[in-house]
Image (tube, rainbow, N blue to C red; front, side, top):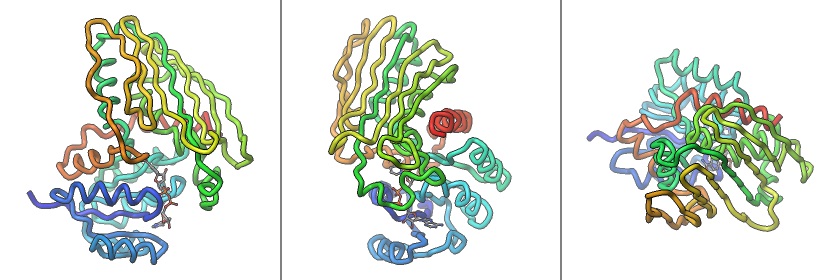
Length: 319
Ligand SMILES: NC(=O)c1ccc[n+]([C@@H]2O[C@H](COP(=O)([O-])OP(=O)(O)OC[C@H]3O[C@@H](n4cnc5c(N)ncnc54)[C@H](O)[C@@H]3O)[C@@H](O)[C@H]2O)c1
């Protein structure tokens, strides 16, 4: 199979995860260009991976995919530039693709008008425990879903907030967009369309954005529950937790990446052997995501309806 060519744009904090995931998929994908407005970053990365460094999205040559890991609030502008100036028919974009529904709708419009495909990254959907829960809930074997709790108790220290765009309304959006977006998406992945929801947020550390939010969300499938997210846990990440209360079962998964089953009491179904250890705080989902890209399999990417609905929830809970 001919390798697909890809350009990675934005060579900051999360880019190493992308580079490692691309390396893991080198049989399918060839990293042809690395792009950063910080030319030194582009050149440094280029030396390591043997790609061509560029400092402007419009200088990216012939590729099949452009993948964005730039600051969140810049995604709309960057994706639109790629739709207009890059040959790539596939545009991959880190979460969240935008901080407002209006911008996200415009992005999809422009990408579709250029006959291209927008592929948003929510890599935690490919976590084996998350996939298992999605299938189990969808199978109806748990009966009626009554209640859930989703807790994201993390630490991002002051050094993290020294990065110019972190904690800003225009580019970051706050804890719900930057850290909890995966888990807002996961609730939609598990339960479908959201109904009524309400949240309150706190700017406990004095940033422009909320660092702590508590919300209640009812889903149209009947599930009611709460989501609590903070980046202000003392000293280090504490835990991520998802607890499910259903007619025919109780499940709790936790760990820094929802990687451990610590309660499993499901009628007629043994606890699966799916707990795993992850060596990275972002999990291994980017490996799976790039494998799907390399194979040309786009069915498991979150669809436009989920992505827009998720941004709608996050926008209301954040601003
Ligand atoms: N999926 C995940 O688990 C995960 C984890 C971390 C970050 N992210 C997302 O990835 C994105 C990047 O986060 P980060 O922490 O790596 O940010 P970062 O600030 O460390 O890196 C961003 C990079 O983009 C570059 N950049 C800015 N404008 C550019 C432009 N016009 N052209 C080319 N490069 C440009 C910057 O110079 C910088 O090097 C954010 O949207 C964030 O939410 C996702």
